[in-house]
Length: 121
Image (cartoon, rainbow, N blue to C red; front, side, top):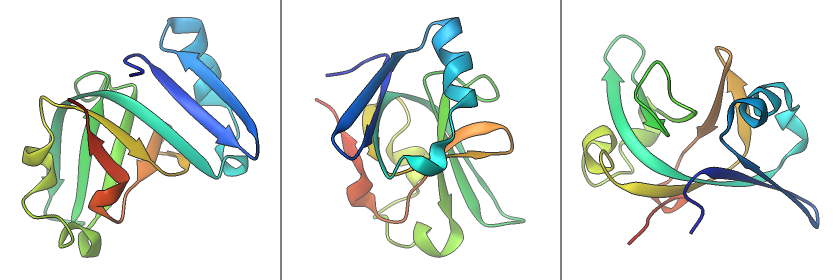
């Protein structure tokens, strides 16, 4: 299990980064549009649902606003989950799969299906 890292898979090459300060700066500057499949494993610290724009934010690797990376679930996709995702995953270590993209200056994975989030034992 990768507790403190992000695995970036592009074609047959993989890039693994720890979350030390220098690597995290590198993560923020990577052009994620070239990374089609990513697996990020971290502890979920908190989450929130915003009524105004119907978006769920889940913080991985630290509490918001200092999280290392976040999961974003848009309103229509929230209905795919058996219970509110911000409550379902908080306190658990998860691996989330999908492309990483920068949103509001923050590395994020947009999740559309619960199968993209795997709870670690």
